[in-house]
Amino acid sequence: MSLPATRGVAGSSFIDMTAAYRVVAVSGSLHEPSKTTALIRAIGAAIAERAEIEFELIELTDIGPALAGALRRDQLPLQVEEKIVAIEQADLLIVGSPVYRASFTGLFKHLFDFVGQYELVGKPVLLAATGGGERHALIIEHQLRPLFAFFQALTLPLGVYASDTDFAGYVIESEVLRSRIALAAERALPLVGYAATRPVELLAG
Image 1 (cartoon, rainbow, N blue to C red):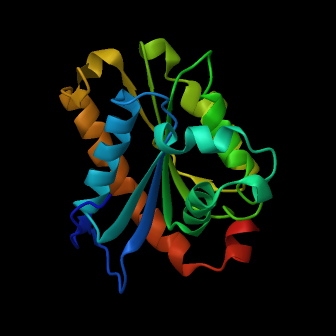
Image 2: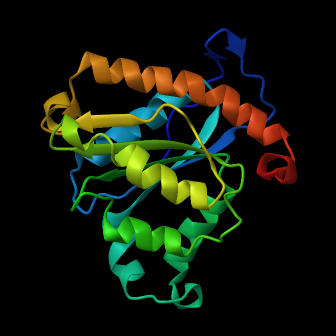
């Protein structure tokens, strides 16, 4: 899918780009429609309002059946291999999962099990999650952040958590959540620009 791309301002700093940032979003939801996917789309749209991007959304509802049967990367069908390459080549990752058995979904983890161990070094990752109530918000700190720390990715300090009460059906209706999404987008872009101009060995050092 694609989102409208514009060139704009993040905070008080102009984002000067010669090419669009490659933004890849991964929704760990196993259902469609999905609050998690709606949240991921909203974050992508907020990024697109502030910078020129190429946006790709990867949904486990699409690739899950083809992904689940593989034990090694060379067993993956082309459809899934292309998604993993997109993850590895992104300038910014937006990742999110519903809280399931106190963690992210198993297929979400299975997808990232195939990502190269050093392919996300220094890559900015914006973390997001959804759950039934606020008590699940710590999934971002206790589950998602350690996973991407393993990859030596640059997890952005501000994650975005949404509970069921933030939605009307599958549409975001909470102004507080919208404000947090906007703030996360504004804070993400300077770090994306920084990472894009730094050699990987310096980011990993």
